[in-house]
Length: 304
Image (cartoon, rainbow, N blue to C red; front, side, top):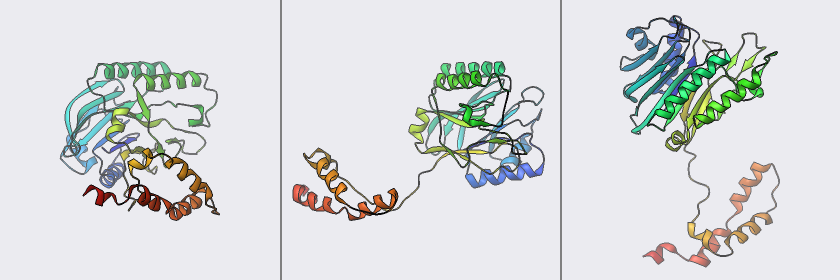
């Protein structure tokens, strides 16, 4: 499942549409979450233009006269829509990832700036999840909150920051959500002059989501059409080529095996940094082959 997320600060004109089409196509996104469209109404043609395809489903949460509006889109060949729920500041879409046949929930979230309003939104969203039969969730968007003081730089005089951090972490815990590793940048919003920066946009998932897509991370893209950075939430499984080391489960049950491995590993004298040392030791470690032949013999012949 690949999700593209961005607080776009207004859908604007052709420049933002072209950017969206380019990123969605390049990342092969199944689902898109956009915050702050600043549009009272969005046409079907506009959604098709944003994706660059007309086989697209969409839901527009208008917010208040366009303020705090959300747009959730999905490609029908990648995500099969079932139903949705909307509240002030969030849209929850339930469906199935077509390729894996996994039922899942994607929540598009935009939290207001006022702390009490944030808490109201988070409580309502927590209630929605508590009443849901689904367990595979991804909540992404602009939460307008940070998890620690280190996620915000250049902001002074905020008397409610400690309380906001505590409330936001409590919300995440109540939802049983996990914060995905961030790749690319440490912050997701910058003031144009660079004096202030925060990590207020993020993707949060349940443990069940990670069981389905275990390599999930949130990748921060280049900032191009907004003062927010776009995020791509995806699970990337790289092919590293042939495995440098193979083991047999029976080895670990054999008495003395662990001691033999530790003693031999310590006996190697290799110069260089930790990575170089590890690589060289793995290359030199041939005793396992000899030990395996002496203890177990030719397993294939014995099986025959």
